[in-house]
Amino acid sequence: MIVACPYCNGLNRLPADKPALEARCGKCKQTLFSGGPIELTAANFTAQAHKSELPLVVDFWASWCGPCQSFAPIFSQAARELEPHFRFGKINTEQQQQLAAQFNIRSIPTLMLFKQGKVVAQQAGALPKQAFYQWLSSNK
Image (tube, rainbow, N blue to C red):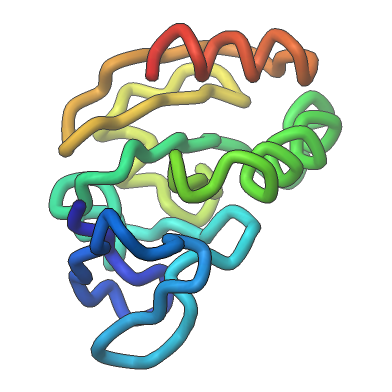
């Protein structure tokens, strides 16, 4: 499986016979899985969503959004518990307006699941933990 580094966006091949959580980037030597969501921007989105073979779960959010703030701990917990099966990323719609417009984000929070650059599932609104995990497993 090819995985993009969350720090330098370098592409890394993960061997199936080694623990993924211990993997390090061949370019910058940082760990490939940090146990938390990464901040996605126009600069790193392509590497994470299109070039990486790892499913990418994206939370489109804004700092002034109450439901976004209440969902943030659930999203972070999912990143800790479900990496390396998924990569979790957050897009601040105030700072990354071009990405929000590209995906026609009309309400926040909006969750999207990408597989090799394609949106395979989308959910508007914050979810309770159990419902979020169920949404992820049903769209795996």
